[in-house]
Amino acid sequence: LHRIESLARITLDGDEMALYESLFSIMEPNAPAPDLVVYLQSSVDRLMHNIAQRGRSYERSMDRAYIADLADAYDRFFFHYAKGPLLILNVAQIDFVNNADDFAELLRQIVAVEGTGTTYLKPPASDERFTMFG
Image (cartoon, rainbow, N blue to C red):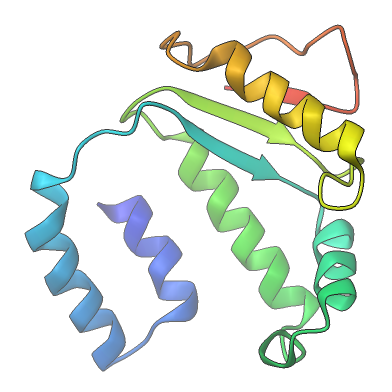
């Protein structure tokens, strides 16, 4: 619970955080465990590039420090994640949105571990741009 709260505290405060905590305490015990959690990890530089490329008005005010704090919080959260199989793919060097080959490789990596229950994975030999951690 504390790791999830630390993620929420980055974006929520006051009444929003109280509502989040209330709903989380009600829903969390009954939530089913996922078959596989996929965390697409990236560098802050790449995240800032993606934000600029999307051009969404609500993302324009997100500064680098906020994105760095958020990325760090997600990294810490997933470092301690133990509720089911976890696949962490560092995608800082790929473009799975605009490159069909990168997207196909991303899907291949996910399908390769789906249902295995594997938490700790070795980097794939097929493409060193995809580094996996567990």
